[in-house]
Length: 263
Image (cartoon, rainbow, N blue to C red; front, side, top):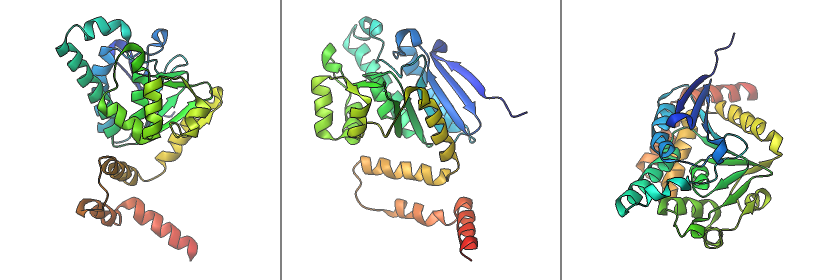
């Protein structure tokens, strides 16, 4: 009998982590609130991601929402507490930045599985992921201006990096709702699937990715992060990664298999 997936809950049940072999799934689990992210979720996200990072068997993380939506934003019902004063507002933005930074910094690939609403803070979480796949009924928006708020610099930077300066400006200044085909057309997502096929497509992609070199994926992410931070030329570190690849078991086995087939 195959081992059963391991389940843990966090943030009073609002975060649910499942580890099934080499694929972990993090579920945003507040379906009655369309998975609006509350303070408990922001606080616990870095701890959950640290546990994923520490698990050597996990090769891919999938983040999705429960109940047909990814996340409808931050929990506005908590805003009277959040904006009670300047210090509490600053503490809140630090919490959000720490959580999204933890997603972006995870060594393994992270896939956002997006159906329904992906709005505001939910979009910020998706932007911190490496890949974004969505269902055909998904809807996206960056609506801080509707509430008189502002995206953090980190969230805005990721939006610009994904869709470009002009498109990011359009999303932030108009707060328009964007359809899945529209999001695909300018690279906000990389794949759109029928709503009832989305989870299967994400699962298949995650399984396929676990068959590749985790060492290569980790260093590809590190290289992309350096480029995003402004590095334009190779350096001793990045060239060292290339040289070190020749010592990995995956490379040696793949090279031997290739040469064997050619012979």
